[in-house]
Image (cartoon, rainbow, N blue to C red; front, side):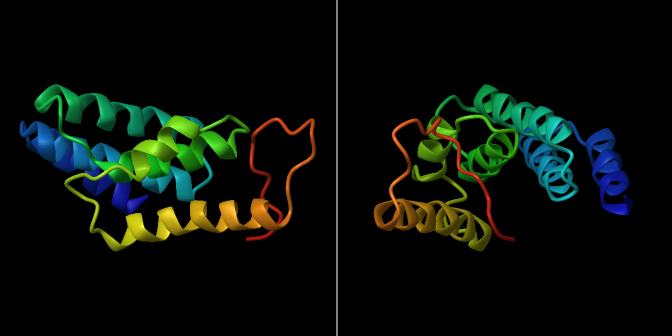
Length: 129
């Protein structure tokens, strides 16, 4: 809660669009960790839209890595977001992104060893924390 207040204060005190995009991403991350997926999706989408409006070719992988996890948590397919998560971007070297990418790579290995059933809906179902 305190972090959200600080982020909101930062958003109110800056007109720098790049800083706002990062702050929106951080809000999405907080809501994701609180399992408030609708709010997380709203703020991650704001961050993605804002960063694209600054420089169309600006890519922030972290937004997409988080959004992919949010979508999957809502039983939605996140294939395009995972692709963007792995794309080269300004934030590709962040340790968090490497962690999120590893989550996806672990799933690939899991499905190679344990193929899903023929009627699989494409949504990853978490079986452990």
